[in-house]
Length: 446
Image (cartoon, rainbow, N blue to C red):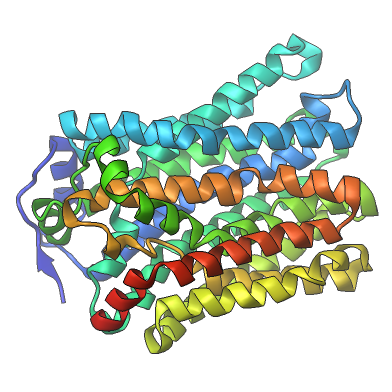
């Protein structure tokens, strides 16, 4: 079933996107879902390209004056800058949204995201410009973070909130598919160039091509997401104030408790997110002597497993409830943290068990982590509250995860990574236990 397109409420660019792409001026719900997935895939692809390069390229290119471990830690420190900049990007682009419309905001944000990522393809090394190379990399990374904060459109979490009561788990899962898809494409590109080029050529120019691809993907994502803001569903939510930004200070004063609990609720999945994607690649290449190409292949298989697990999370959540899926998955992640990290020192078989088991748990938890407490916000603060919650959760749960995990593992051993992951599981269970109001609202809505 399709719905007629409502009148544009923002910019000519949005009207053009609607009129050019919609068949007979109608957009099907499935096309909305595709637009959300494409947008999220582009964001995750940009970040995974940087994450892989921070292990395989930047320690040698940007930090050749320190040992490989220290260079990787420096790269992970720069990795965190995007998550620090993300809340600032949300504030800046909310102002753009209010003044010029959602289409202008998305256009600027996604071009900034793609441009910052592509600029890294032209990054000179330490041998050419000395320490300036690190400052340039930091600036581009901050650009990614600002853009990601600005690319927030509120639709992923609001899709699940406004979905039929018996399908909320499925709709909540849809945007999360972008993570394994982005990882799969990023790993595939790096694996291709690693296998096709000599180590010298790869470090000289081969690693730069995935960053060029990012810009093209972001152009596609921009047009796909502009179509979303032209849909009747989007306009209805906007008119109901569910997609209108509220002042940040007012939102924090009135609903700060919900923001904090909402940020804690997905920490188990967000901590695990980078502990099965970024950290293991660094550990394996630094300490085990395993081939980076082989491990990228394992990550690609893991991404496919994660994709299937995210799909399963939607089906399971519609049967038992999203809160139950988050709670049970947090318990399983806590159990996983007690033994799994040590498997990275267990040879090829141990690495496979760690990665595939981790991606199964990640898919179940991450699939339901989007907008988990969105319904607890009042309608006029829902858009801003959801954005603040997402920013804080990514900053606390994922932004520093590769840096912390590698620091702990190199200093105390892999068991300490398990303790770090366990802390995320405890935070999730604590938030779920405290937020009784959320539990009551979900129970009454189902």
